[in-house]
Image (cartoon, rainbow over all chains, first blue to last red; front, side):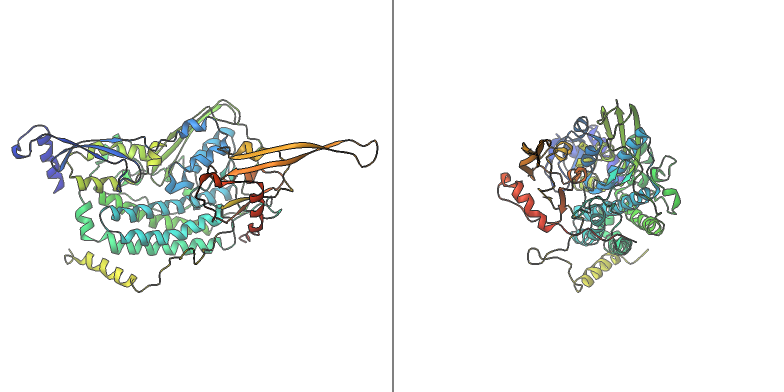
Length: 398
Length: 152
């Protein structure tokens, strides 16, 4: 239905056939503060009646200058800043950055640290997708799913907190491994703190609850006719567009791009040890983007369940010098963040601080397609499209 | 395919079931949530262990730790001994209005003077009151828990 409208409106904005719709366009500002924009995104929409003739996402309201801040901080300090880029999936941000530093220093993380990183990254992915899958119905007008999915997500946050000490801003990765020293105790701080007791049971429980959340969301949202009417056929991204605009992550996979950095050869974490599927959609519409994420939660649950049974023993951290001096050189490392491809390009001139840090974040590329797919849409459909792209403004502006 | 409206009915059925389940809400402040032992709530200072080496202050990503100290000379016990100097901590402030709770200061402290405590109820009406001084940071020491047991 909607794609027919889409064809019609192109003619209108071209000054075409539809005489009664032809009129002056009006500029409508959506945001920077708006309930549907996940932050301070401003959309400058030129509307022709109820339809959008032109759309400009105006970004920069959340700009915190991370790349510049990194030029005056040591690598350990940058890690604390990095997990604030995309605050819904804080842990996953760190892994690629630390891997880039490790590549420069020439240190390999220990196998045990790799597994713990993998488990926590997947937990973060589940939590990120639960936030999406519950807030997306909210944008379409249903508030129940939000509360329910957040309730089950709390178990995942508790697990992450019990290991790292932080719920979102974990700051848990160190060069060469992971470092669970947070919250020691009297004169026992220097004792190596490993996974806390009951960790595996807590993860198992959190996975059960995440599955419950998926089942509930499936019954409440996935089969819901109103959601179908709002999301199906809305905001279609073709495979070609997804590739041309650099869309990555679940958004690209919903358009049928079979690309997942987790199973690439340059994968940072040992995903090859586990059996899971890469979910791809067919239509590339908003509903597919929702569905891909729901199915990805189930795949991640599968990965975590396999991983907690096979965490190898050994040290948590490889041997690295106490004062970390990074040799001159450059490194680019990318990883599959819950939102898409997250890459870090580090230029080091030697010493404790980087000369330059370039951050390639997924949301920035993902929202760049807004100005293409929104043209011709109704204003309420714009909200449905925008919500389905699952961006976070901290990830857009950095 | 299916009966029209079946998705809505399913959704209503599951919301009806939810009506009879127990809520998980923690009614703070009447009930308190049980926090993880490693939770990063507030930083406690053991002034006896602090040597004013300024490592925490330097490694802090936003430099929110303020340390001032002065040196005193300690006379030798017996004649002919060496005169030693010791740092006396005058000021140790952490500005929780700036703190990012990253834990780098606790990690770099070589003398076990800083600890994490899961305590979190210290909000203030004025942002200047979030600057905790030496005394207040020492008071938090009472809330530092024993370290968590490890997974076997």
